[in-house]
Image (cartoon, rainbow, N blue to C red; front, side):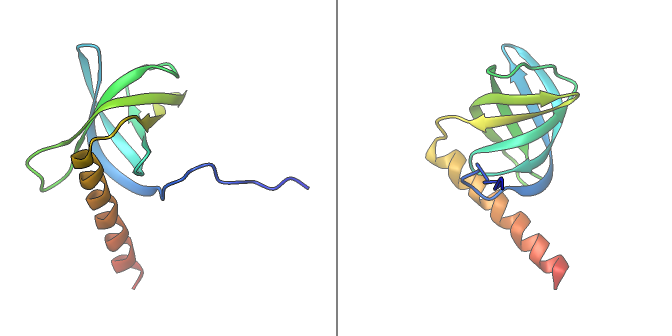
Length: 113
C-alpha cells in the first residue's frame, strides 16, 4: 500500500492576488492562485523553466506597497501555470506573507460560519 505524504512544510491557502513576475529585466503580470510561507502557484503568460530564478511582487488589495520576493526559484510549470519556492526571505517579507496568509485564513473561516 502506498501512502501519500505531503511534502509542504507550510500551510498553503487559496489566494487570488495580482502579481508581477520578473525575469532579468522582463516583467509580466500574473495572478497568484495560492500562497504559503515557502512558495506560491502563479498563472502568467511568462514561460519559465524549472530551476530559473525570478522575482515576484504580490499586489495585495488595500496595501500601498507590494510584497517583493527578490528570490523565487521555479519548481515546475504546466501550460501557463508554475510553482515557485521562495529563497532567503527577509524578515519583512516573511511578516508580510504571514499577514497575507492570516487574512485569507480569517476570510475563509468567516465564509464558513
